[in-house]
Amino acid sequence: MLTNTGASITRNAGYGNGGDGVASIVAIDGAGSAWTALCVSQCVGGPSPDAVVQVSFTGAVLSPAGGFQNPGLQGPQAVAIDASGNVWVANSAGRSNNTPGSITQLVGLAAPVKTPIVSQISGVSNLIGAHP
Image 1: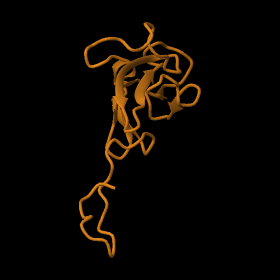
Image 2: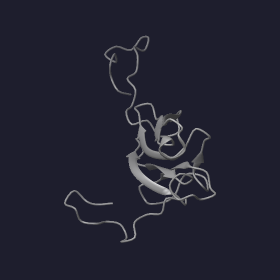
Image 3: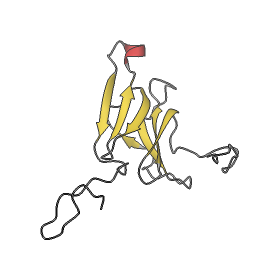
């Protein structure tokens, strides 16, 4: 983690990611947690399944041991979080086993990155289009 001037505010070794694969792309959710995909089977040939891990802004691993696992994760390379808190993972399995790459969606796993707009509340004025 760096300040806006580029000075390091974390230990030199960085934070652990709670898994044993290759992590490449990091996305930040609405709660400030960092998310990354761990490529294990296609990248390091390890016995563990591919996974997605969550690390808090303090460096604590928030995902379960081995990360969030899903059979749809096959050589994950990138992760993104949408406004609703869905985690999207780009898989590159086609590179080594002739299987087409894919995208996996993990619905509602992360904190939303944008607060939804509330609808008109009965009996209360001036709230249409306002953030809660």
